[in-house]
Length: 232
Image (tube, rainbow, N blue to C red; front, side, top):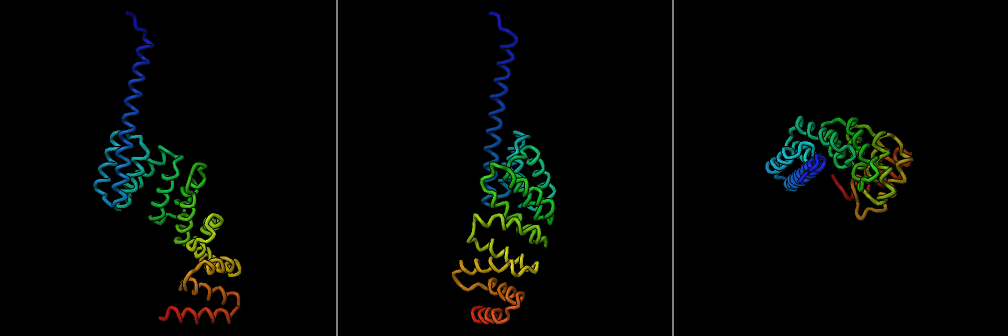
């Protein structure tokens, strides 16, 4: 029987596609194992699984993402950076990869560069948890002393988490650091409204805000409350 060249080519392409799919599934399985062991702090086993995944499929972004996280945990920063760069290059629309690389850069005191990748993650329309990157970006920039750049990230989360103490306190701390006592006041009040018990950080910032506004009597009341609940 005569078999056309095109039929042979089609069969060959189908076989290659089946083999490629099998390799991708295998690489993803090992990548997920790497993530699992990473979550258990079993970094040596996690590293083995990630390396297997990369060996099976050198273009599998998830494997490089896992590899980056593991290398970061092991303080192997050069290798971590290379792995994250590979992951970003292979899958530039994956928000988790963008976020993880940004967190790594922030840990390396590269807040300005980290901001670029946090922003890339936040801008992706299918990102299901942009609040995670907004908060991490705000913390990263605040810890780097870049308060003016940090503030908009916290403000952007607030409508979705209006009673989140971590967000409210961060906004107050930044506004106080910038000398914006009037702007700090409504957030300080919202923070105080959700507190269920006296809080030393809240009282210390309240003292600064009241003094900054020239409300010396209120500042003294807060100072007395601080001494009563948190005697040194």
